[in-house]
Image (cartoon, rainbow, N blue to C red; front, side, top):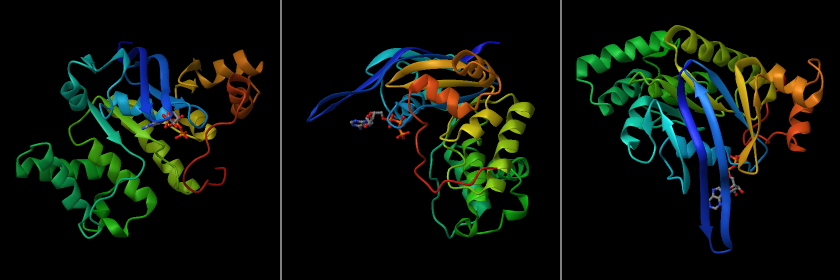
Length: 262
Ligand SMILES: Nc1ncnc2c1ncn2[C@@H]1O[C@H](COP(=O)(O)OP(=O)(O)OP(=O)(O)O)[C@@H](O)[C@H]1O
């Protein structure tokens, strides 16, 4: 399978008054076409900083990366064309409808009006939002809002979808729905998905492969079962124990309210 994301020695140091902070020291990773990759790590490991670099929001201070064949440093516009990004909290004007939000997004991507309208309908169908098209976005549930955020990120049919903690704050049913949806996107469109999550059950259920970062570098990678076997000694081990064996710490605590286990 060809690589869709590839990084070599990716690094970012922040200059602060108290001195330099090496948020990401050296991240080497590869994500294959059509893969769902779970990107995990303890608090402060460098997940968000890596994600912000890969989505061109932040310039690396070291190393290199390509997304869909486009170099982060020399072709950031190409990276953006190939990527959809769903940040942790979306949401614009609560008074506009789902349809208006989707059409506006299409227009932002320079689709002619008729095409933007057609694309909105298509995305709504795909993300189970058709019955909500005329609802004000302020009246959506957390799960519906998240589906709308994903629909917007897919407007330009990106090859890669970056999801930053997609189910934080959702209830168990909303999380399960979102997992189904992400899998369907991958299965039907071959979309490559790079997701950060604080939930090990989510990583286990959704990701084909996990990359665990710690202190700004990759501490382990593999399928959930390969990691269990390698680091916790048994396929029966919990992913929590596996994670502890790798990092010596628990996974990062989510910013939002923690859902009960599904
Ligand atoms: N703008 C910044 N200036 C200085 N230090 C920063 C900045 N952004 C992040 N850091 C530091 O870099 C390190 C990595 O941060 P990052 O947010 O990437 O971690 P994370 O893995 O996403 O953590 P969390 O799970 O808690 O969200 C942390 O020590 C953080 O304090």
